[in-house]
Length: 251
Ligand code: SF4
Ligand code: SF4
Image (cartoon, rainbow, N blue to C red):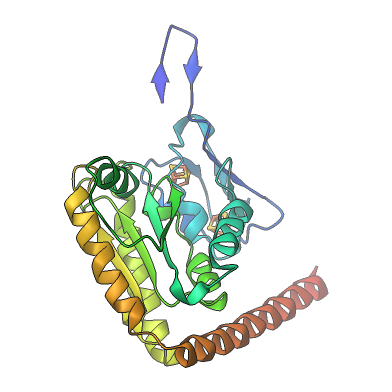
């Protein structure tokens, strides 16, 4: 947020917006927002509301909302999902989808490029403003579409452009590794790495490691994961439907 002249306020174009119809008044978004930009009072029973002037657009609230009730302007779920689909539409087994935060990892990849450092050409970057924006669903979707490995990458802990939003990324990934273990998916296939804008060499090294990891994943392993992901998706869909039906009955 920047104050330009008295009475004039400029805000980020990339901000969050709550769909009040979908909000289940859980309060998670308010808890994770590094900027206290979400108005929420559980006693009021009212849906959460984003104070646009205070929102910096990290996307953490959107990633953590269990009800898909928060959308990010300009970096919508549909746009990011379409990018994942495009990357994995052909020869998915040879691709490395990389979620890279705008300020550090994406810039680190750029730096590797301008420094003419060679890194595996099959890496495909999906830019998000913050690693905190990477919803679990994006990663599951990538695995369902046949990704052999997935990398989530952001600013080093302590250097997050959005105060401490990447702490939530770390927590989320830990949660996801547990789920992967439970489902019988090798958790190594999902990696989390911190790469700063000045670390072109580190970006190259991480991508070389990702390529080695990718080579270790067999087509059978990918096929098995696709089946598991489809099963999970159907399970969640039927659970959501039951919940909605129950809510309708009580309304
Ligand atoms: S996390 Fe989602 S469902 Fe929960 S209060 Fe915020 S917007 Fe509503
Ligand atoms: S978590 Fe990030 S995107 Fe969400 S309201 Fe706060 S600053 Fe905005």
